[in-house]
Image 1: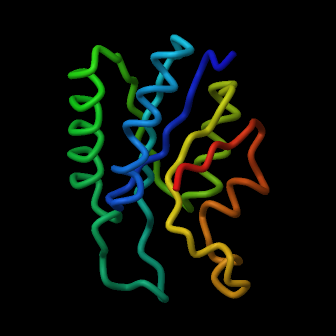
Image 2 (image 1 turned 90 degrees about the vertical axis):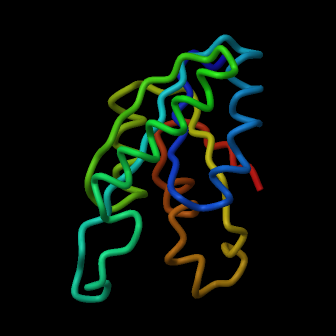
Image 3 (image 1 turned 180 degrees about the vertical axis):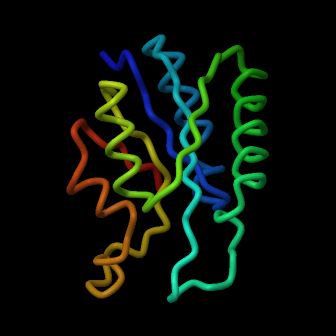
Length: 135
């Protein structure tokens, strides 16, 4: 059913908490797993580099995630890109012809002002394939 599953990850606890469910899903469907992390460029609104704006930190995150899945006998491919997370996630899903995007959620999308800024909500609205949100 899900031949290719895209799992966008960042350094949030929500992404870490979603990993076991993604592993279960991938094992059940014998899916190809692709891990994606996005390096966010600095902007005037966010001049201080945060944890997700360092290519080195993102590479380290992807390696740790790949090891986590490898320990569960799941081979994962890794992709690192730069840009606005929601748009990059959807572009990569389209490039891979992904059958599913599985991602953690911070649970802030119910507040209208925050919803407009939510990566999760943007992915849901722009995705070329189904999106599984793991709370």
